Each structure stands twice: as structure tokens, then as C-alpha cells.
Amino acid sequence: MPYVNDADVERMRSQLFFEGPDARRKASRYWLLLLLSAVIASAGVVGDSTATVIGAMIVAPLMVPILGTVLGVVLADRDNLLRCIGLVVAGAAAVVAAAWLLGVLVHVPVVASNNSQVAQRVTPRLIDLLAALATGAVGSVALARDDISDTLPGVAIAISLVPPLAVVGLTLESGATDQARGALLLFVTNVSAILATGLLVMAIYRVSRRATVEPNGARKPVHRGRATAVIVAALLVIAIPLALTSVVVNQTTSTESTVTRVADAWATEHSWDIGSVTTRPDGVLIRATGPAPEPDADSLRAALAAAGVGGTTVKVELIPNHTVEVTPN
Image 1 (tube, rainbow, N blue to C red):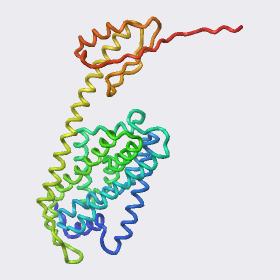
Image 2: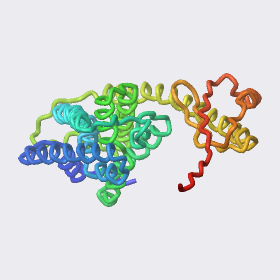
Image 3: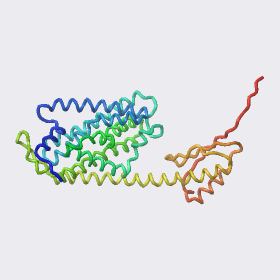
Image 4: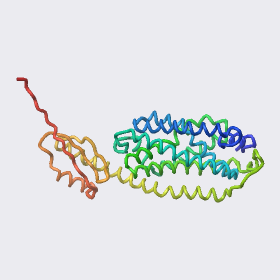
């Protein structure tokens, strides 16, 4: 595998660090694109538009200071490391604030129960961490190798950074703090995954050997081992709630599938139809429609118990379906 040379390191520094004569221009570009992507993402979430949210992912520049944090650790460059961390934290706060302000203008609460974009981002699982690790690795390799940099737009779409922050702001404004915490966990998961895989990729390409390359000849060192340990520890800590959420989601999915199967058989027996089966905090809600008289719920209760979900709270909403003919006078 070819290792990076001095020219590669200078290229990466130019792409990721906010330093030198172009520092002010880079900073203004970062904040301009970040605020615009925040508005686009928030509007896409409010409008429940996947295409708009994808557009925000492409525009969002948050990947730059996150990978800059990786490079700052690898090159032991304390000044640029702290600067990149500050840009990530301040940028995340700015996106949340922008989304919260947009949420004030929306009269309908933007929550998971009525918005699929929110629902996709408030219950992160281990599979999301796995995807983030793979995506972060691709982004880091594309950074180290300029011959595959054309994959970066795909990386921007695959890794979700600004949309979860937009969901945090919108759900906070809607009063759904639990969902806001879930979306924030997804963002932190993605950031941690990028940092961890970025350090691994930089180690494989032996970027640290070029740590002495400095434009001004002065460098405040960073203890790479401690920084790496902090990032790995954060990743392990984050994996705990992701694992718990994965277990809960799997159990919920299994229970809902069983209830749906039993309810369909019960409804067919009474010439009724199941409209929906939804898992809610207080249990599973079944909506059924059909002709009068209403079917006996005792047989459904017995069937659920026989299927092994008798301990689950199940509510049935029966909606009689009948036709009334109105003749003209």
C-alpha cells in the first residue's frame, strides 16, 4: 500500500485546516454553507421530503472540521485540533438553534408520530454505528488518496450529520425531549465513528510520520495515545445505548409482527379487516373495520395468549363499516 508523502499531507492540511492566509475565507465559506444546509435540512424534515434532506447532506460542511480533528490528532497539531473541535461544537449548536427557530414558525409539532424523517433518526441502533464506521472509513481513504476523492459526495449522503441536528432542534421546540436525545445520540455516533475510523485509516497510511511537516515551523504537541484512547472510549460508551435500543426495537418488531398475524386471522374469521397495527408507548393499537355487529374481542385475547404475546397490552379500535342509502324525495 502506498503511504502518504509530504505533498499529500500539505494537501490534507489545505483541505481541512482553517489556517494561513485563506483562513478567513475558509471560515466564512464554512459558516455560510453550514447555515444554508441547516435551513435546507430543517425544511426537508418539516416537509417530510427525503430529496430535500439529501440535498442538505451534500451541502453540509461539517465533515471538514471532523476530519480536521483526526488530522490534528495524527499530526499532533494542538492549535488546529482545538480549532476544529470548536468548529464542530459551535457548528452543531448553530444547526440546532436554526432548526429550533424554524420550528417556531411551524404550527404542527414535528415529531416521530407524524413525520417519517424524524422517526428515522430518533432511535439509533448498532447497525447505524456499523454504517457510520464504514462510511467514515471511505471518507478518510478519499481524503488520503486524491485519486478517489470523487466518492466524497456519496460519503456526504451516507453519513448523516446535519439532518439529526435539525431533528434535535425541531423536536426540542415541539417538546419531544426524548426524541431530541435520540437524534443527538445519532449525531454523536456518526461523529465518533468518523473520528475512530479516520484515526485507523491515517495509521494505515502512516500519516503520523509526516507530523514534523509544519508551515510555520512551530507546533504544540498533542499526546496521540491519550487522544486516541478518549475517542475509542467514547465509541464504546456510545455503543451501550445503541445496543439497548437495538434490543428494544427487535423485541417491538417481533411483538408487532405476531400481533399483526393473530389480528389478521381473527379479523378474517369475523369478516373484518385490519387497517393498521401500531406500537405505542402504552401498548399495541389495532385498528379494524367491518360490518356490524362488532366481533368478540375475547377470542382475540385468547389467540394472542396462545401466540405468546398475552402479556402485551393490546387495544382494539373497532370502526363499524356500513352503507346508508339515501333516496331522493
